[in-house]
Length: 251
Image (cartoon, rainbow, N blue to C red; front, side, top):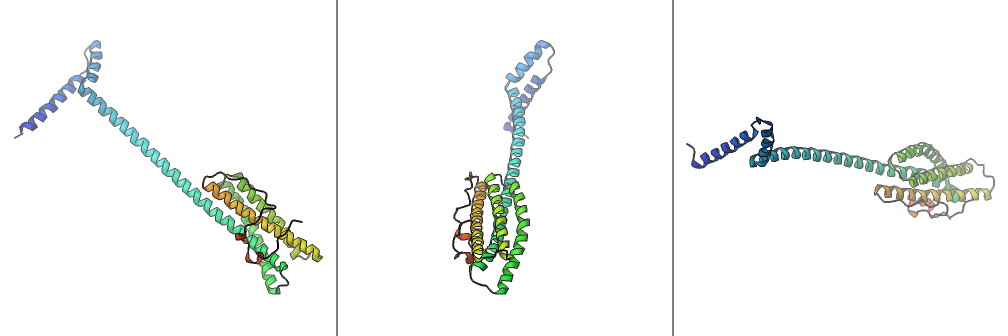
């Protein structure tokens, strides 16, 4: 048997339903049609139905919009993370590649800056230089392509292009020394000093290129690349054998 409270609740529910059915009855005349619409939206039950419909529609749209926005944000975050990882790897590869070829060049210069070295040591230095030179010719081209993909700052590309050009000049200078085309001691001294100057310029360019790449990765504006000639090289990048070599001026 139902309690008085439950009976009262049922009666109220039936009364609301009756009102809604009455409001939803099709009008019998054109005039009644207008009055029906007004009565529907003017009645509390009609406003309740309208509010429910609007709330459901707007709520569904907001839920869809929020879900799409969150998905887009997740995709953007993943893309930025992947790009940052690729940029970081490129910085490491560029630094290792330039450092490896530069170290091989330093080793050749050190042989001629310090007295006569053992024949076996000279052979080892020459062999390593030719190996690293061959790798450099390939790796430098690959790095230029990767720079075009992952870095937008033109100063980065200009700086690395200068590295390539100066490495080419340094290679020509070292080949003149290694091939025995230098005939006099004075000429050999000039070539050695010019080679050292080129090596120091490449070190400076490497440091500058790394700074520009880091600036772009952090979202900071880059500073224009300074002229490499006359720019002091970074002691941190000097090989141990070259720390004691005298400074030199270009030919």
